Length: 199
Image 1: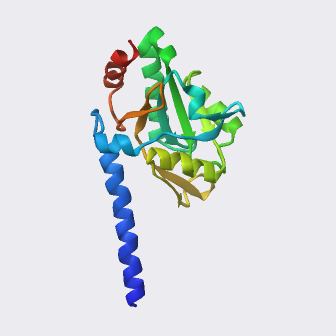
Image 2: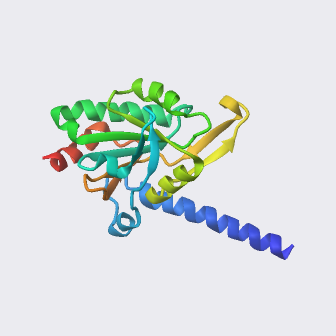
């Protein structure tokens, strides 16, 4: 009984740490992250894009990255965020050439490159979809300090859904994490923040 109690406390402590970290990183609605969080996030990934090509974060050097973790069967947060990223790209006009929106799927079982190609194309031709093996996705999420987890849900497609971090990460052309835009940050605010960076 004592061991079970210790395990339960440890488990709750671990979950608490996850939620504390998620709130610490993503609670800055419309604001920049602090230096400690900025230094803790080192964006890295080695994945496959929606055309079937192998890519890493270095493949996009020289461009500002807007990185979002999600999945194609997401009922609300993902389509809303991708539609907003499309509006950001359109709102930047010619400056948008310096920006690369990236959608990293955390559901490799269903989101192969073909599925991602169809999905991201529905929002904007500039959005790149990425997927990979479980280990590669876990490493990518860890480098961003992003959270995701499969959750069994009888009414969801295939009987499960994916819980995931809802923020958009901004990465500099040199590959340095700059800040997050929390879910619900107005498109106009994101554009206002990006424009001076693109000059």
